[in-house]
Image 1 (cartoon, rainbow, N blue to C red):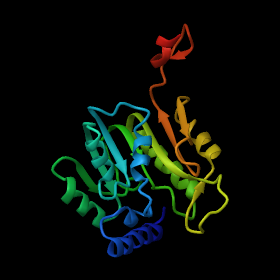
Image 2: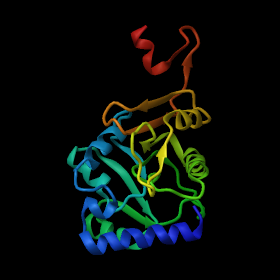
Image 3: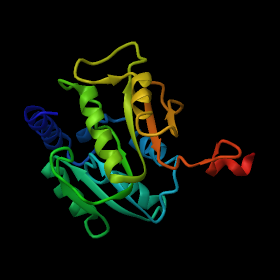
Length: 218
């Protein structure tokens, strides 16, 4: 994601913010209210209680709000490139969570998180979408200790807008396997979207050749 694309993204979302205010529409999710379902899916593979979580593309901190509503207690850090979004997120949740205006790919960080989650970041057409996804996954892998997950629009559709990027589930799954053999892809909650989970709990029981979390079922 080059500097021109970053500024274009910031300008695009600021125009939506001016038009729609603090709403899902400003984040590009339309009016169908499905963002909370996406959060539910992103949290479906792991017990996030008492863990540290980084949310890339946090917007107004809605994922943190969803966690709080669900009674999930985390050390949450939200990151976004849009300063206006970060200002709003701090106003809403700054007493309970951390929010940073940051370009994760260009700014160094030594902080580690148990999990990295990202919703909606990979949905817009760029000069090199797969290159951007790979760069983000490389960074997610570097700063997460237990796993990372992200959602995508699927290319298994009959229609695509010229400005939205629809990823191949097969290509994303192939990329995910570069980081772990313990991978989950969910395409069971919406027909035209999917979520991939890269799990670092990949320790295998040598006797059963089963991941240790599943040995109790053998």
